[in-house]
Amino acid sequence: MAHHVLEIEKLKVRFWSTNLLKLLAGKDPYQIIEAVSDVSLRVEQGTILGLVGESGCGKTTVARSVIGLNTPQAGSIRFAGKELVGLSQSEFKPVRRQIAMMFQDPNGSLSPRFSVKDLITEPFKIHGENGDDVNLVEEAQRLLKMVGLPPDSFLGRAPHQLSGGQARRVGVARALALSPKMIIADEPTAGLDVSVQGDILNLCTRIKRENNVGFLLITHNLAVVRHVSEKLAVMYLGKIVEKGDTDEIFNSPRHPYTLALLSAHSHLNPENGRSRVELKGDIPSLLKRPKGCEFHPRCPFAKKICRHEAPPDVREGGRKYTCHFPLQ
Image 1 (cartoon, helix red, strand yellow):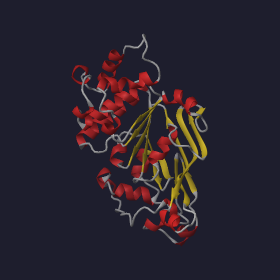
Image 2: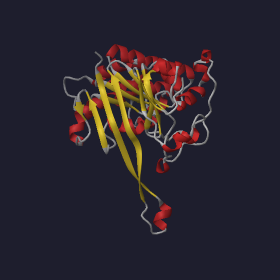
Image 3: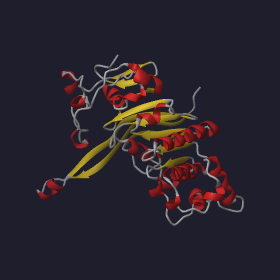
Image 4: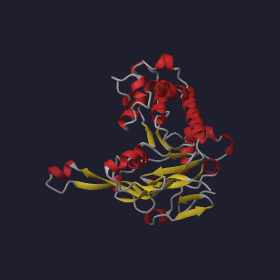
């Protein structure tokens, strides 16, 4: 029986937006944006769930909600059986000890005033574990070895002395400091050369296996999740449009948006023989969500019902998707 380290159910996250034109015209300038709408996800211990979608679709908002940086308006987030929605910041602190976050820009998130040793042992200090029983130098050496960086060469370096790949490894070491149950990796390979991307993904896979850690891997790049994630969820305009086993979705997508994302990376499945599908237009504004199926303005298969009726949730074995006319 699989053990879920993270369970998200019907999560809604809304933000206030200010319209300056309305403000100048003396009208009510405030509008509500629903950035995350009814999202449900599960991350099993020792597995990687890939969360994919175009920039601005709500992936990072989900991650920030899990670690308590956003306040959900509805839904449930359970981590290791504990409900997180509604916790105060003081109640959240012991949870953050068990959930590590790898941010998009490793160099930007590494203080230039700190050495590598200070950076990767900072979590011990934040959580009050730098007393007599914790040798920070030994911990730093242990963590650097885990991520494949020789301690003698890297303990004293500053962030500006690291390459992009080395900075990512330091980010992984920092994430591992307190032996978390789960790691959220937000675009862990963005901006890296392809060969270095592979090194970082292989490192994440090894850590998942050796430490039985659950990963939520957030990316817009399907090539990243193809070979490392067991499960995949596809997000569009703050909603999950398809989720299930990664191999099943890659081999036989049901939602047209998933097919369009795969078409943009046709080299991933060259043997599949599927026709390419190109997305039309831009992502609609969250302030003006399309009626019916929100993907219909960009969907090459849309019919009249798609413009007026929201699609049903369809379950197919372990797969779930939302579409009036799923691909076969």
